[in-house]
Image (cartoon, rainbow, N blue to C red; front, side, top):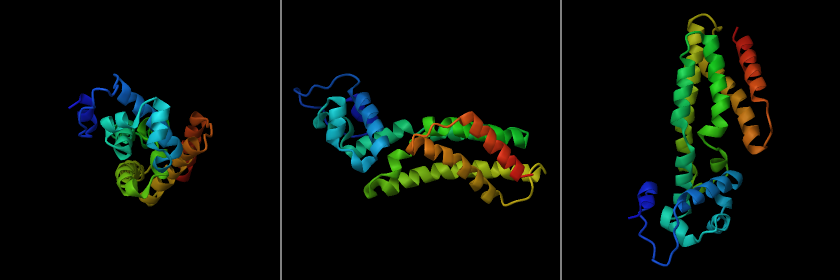
Length: 210
């Protein structure tokens, strides 16, 4: 079994001798598929589209990834680094001073989420056949993020720095403001001044929590 078959878990058999499989082909396919899935969604990208973009054939794609769903899963695994993001958010939220922790959390979230965590475009226009799978995977991670934000707010309330409010509602409001700029950035290609938005959200939320 080829190393790439083991890597991506396709269980594919070795290709026929006449099939031209070059080193780096799997990475080339992943890169092209990632771009196409992110731009159009799973349902609107065909195997033919991916082969055309990479100059490969369907048998080569099937050799590495089994089928289009296998390729999508490989793209998702390669793009998603939510564990890293959650680790950074946890570290930011643990800063001793709640106000500084909030500013750090906001900075990490806006700096990391769109580029390094995962691309929601892969999922938001997905097919029903994998929607439940992808939704559950994303939901688990986002719930962890929400829990970190909620804990940060609660710590601020308990220390008397923030006023007494429902920490769950407050954290939802905070994440809602942060997700707004992410959504616009990804789906409408809106160029935002991230540094200015970080300052605005931090100041706005702190004023609301006084």
